[in-house]
Length: 216
Image (cartoon, rainbow, N blue to C red; front, side, top):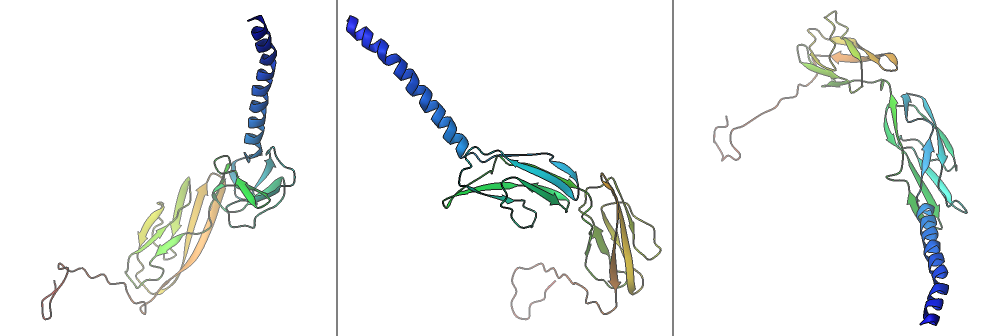
């Protein structure tokens, strides 16, 4: 009985060592395939310069690829610096390539928010006839807006407005956007012409008809 207790006592340190080793190894490998990075800032005005620091543990012999999700080329630097020129929200992805096996930072990445005006607005339809209603709208985040339709009419201040032109011609439409990063002035030409074919919508009260049937 005494020998049994002695043997058990001798094995206890090895048991503890084994559990500690397993814990350390599991922690290491979990970190090794946990692709992470940090950034020096996550928001700002357009032309925002962001420095990315790769904090991934396992780096030996690995290739890293930065995807900024803004339409620019991918970057293969270990650490990276990137300029975001267009307002929007971007989730940057860092991918590790190891002998053809890839791991990425999805779920661990940073979201970069770029403020400011996109520099464009939209119209529907894109051209119109005289007295036809036209919708002008902007998707920018703004403090205030001011529309000038170029025909001497009263300015509007909503992000989605309707306007019609009484005469043909090319009008310079101006949108002044006041936002958190300053003020931008955007201009576009809008053409009003009698030669535009209007969009006609036809609605009928029957799903199917026979020959010579009246359609209402």
